[in-house]
Length: 356
Image (cartoon, rainbow, N blue to C red; front, side):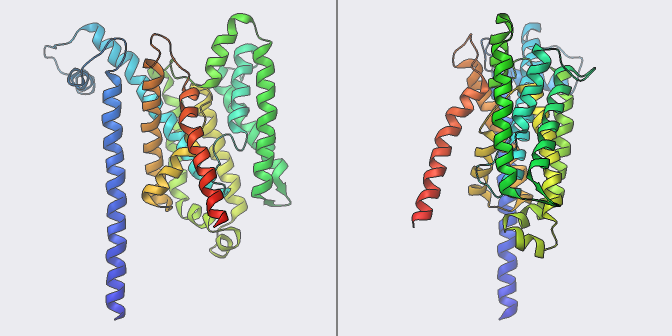
């Protein structure tokens, strides 16, 4: 009898693993399809077949005749492909940050803004652009990283009680600092030269319009490091979801885990803000949707969240640059239109669950 139960349990586990793999593969296929389609959409439309041929010609160079023009080649390879890749990197990074924070803080509404890292990075970037106060040699990028690091360090100092980091104090300190940094950013923006104001506002609301091949290096390194860390700590993140005492009984040092994740999420957030400005709701919405699809196990949740975040931001960027063409809508505006209704639905769902 026990053997039959064990076999049944093993079959169920294998089926669950296979289902998760299929979902992740389907997500990668969707990302590929959405990306290729998005590359062809714009003021100059390029059909998917030509897009694929141009991509293939650059990835596998051949000395054969081509059926597309030099202009089409430049539009696809020099302008749209870097933009799509940057959207993938930013979306994946934001989703990973949200997934990690929601597990460690045990707050379903956690996202990169919760610990003040996003606001700190924005303040650093805006300070570099307006005041010229920047990390030598790194300009806006280095200043965004510095702002995120200062925010993370300050949150740690405010939330620490002895050798422990309490999640409630962590969230409260992060929210307070986020308001403070946002106020400072607003002051710098309003008092800046009139000609700089539109560009600053567009940056703060999120944009990847300045994407280029040279801009992809930093967010790629940050994403690879953040993803590797999250997968390495996946079991610990699972334990953290069960509560402080249960995680401690499983041998997880929650204070150390929170410090590590504070550093990792600050680096990821800083890299995102440096290249794309402030983009909200992606880190909050995507992990929830993925949990509904695949469950709470982080070994599957983290890859699916990364892929789903990339898909979402590619779609958002496509809408942002085409909906009001020739004008471009900031990414943060579009993500807020998606995220705010989801936030209200989640709030209502949690309220109804508590009443029952």
